[in-house]
Image (cartoon, rainbow, N blue to C red):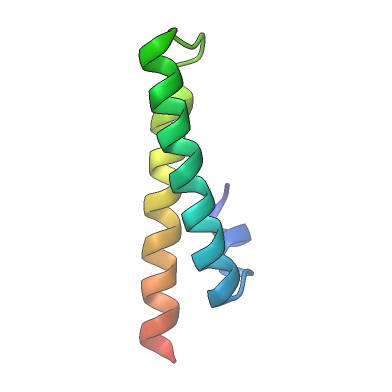
Amino acid sequence: MKASEIREMSISDLRDRIEAEKAALDTMKINHTISPIEDTSKIAKTRRDIARMITILAEKEKQN
């Protein structure tokens, strides 16, 4: 997800999306432990997306 797309989201949408992505990341990690997934870079990409969303959320909250 690009930063420009994240910036267009509202604060409440961002919080919901962060929680959903964290849950998806946990599921991905568990599934990878049980049986390795083909594209392991998905885990890193999801982690980076979560970090990006948290950063932009902090910026938005600071502005308000």
